[in-house]
Image 1 (spheres, helix red, strand yellow):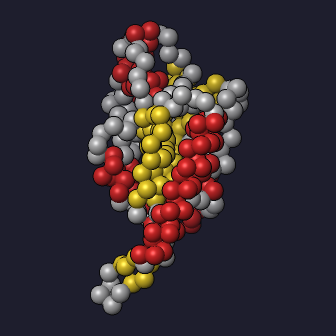
Image 2 (cartoon, helix red, strand yellow; image 1 turned 90 degrees about the vertical axis):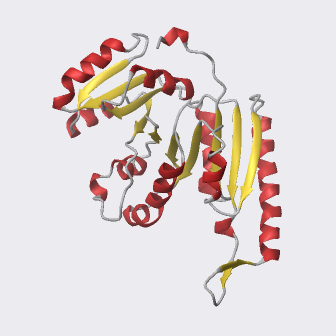
Image 3 (tube, helix red, strand yellow; image 1 turned 45 degrees about the vertical axis):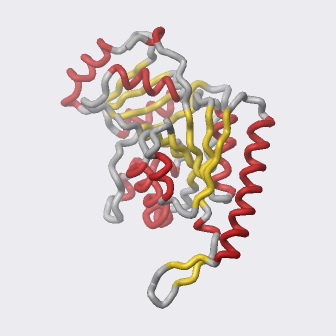
Length: 272
């Protein structure tokens, strides 16, 4: 998998929106950070959180038709505003949209197989908010989506900086991973954390990776992770996390997902 043999690929990204200011910040990040390589956007607007529901005696959830239809009209106007904003940037991007009743429609949309990356913005206000709210959203996305980019709503990425992706080594990572990642994310440097037992395996991997990729390796410990951040202050930093769901019993202190998001570091999940 040669770096100089990569073929320009059309990428379609899906942006989750619900009308909130936090979710809308995803647009600023995607358009202004220039971290993503794409030429097609799907705006996926979820109505459900903003439509009042009443519960009948049989415990079924019933939508008020008038409220629902009014909400859909407002959502349509909102999406038109977003599309006009994107078009005003003159980026030559194809835009489409879906307005759906709940997040459960996401799986059906992704089953079409044309989405390369699902993105959303999340505001993690505190540990309890992460445990009882945001971790559920992340778990749902990991269960329905392939490649995912989640970033904090207060994320401060600069288009003037280079981008560094930190990831944990595993034997499933092959040379093709770096090509596939580079095809959708503008990554200038990969920092790989490995355990003592993986020293030989990671050295073998480095032999097989195209030398045009800038890669550095570190033994996985708190000190080295801190050093990576300190040495790369001139870089935008992203973390690739494992696709393991957080349970309510998971130690949040040890949760790399919570630590990254609370430190304003975007999270990338790959199908690898």
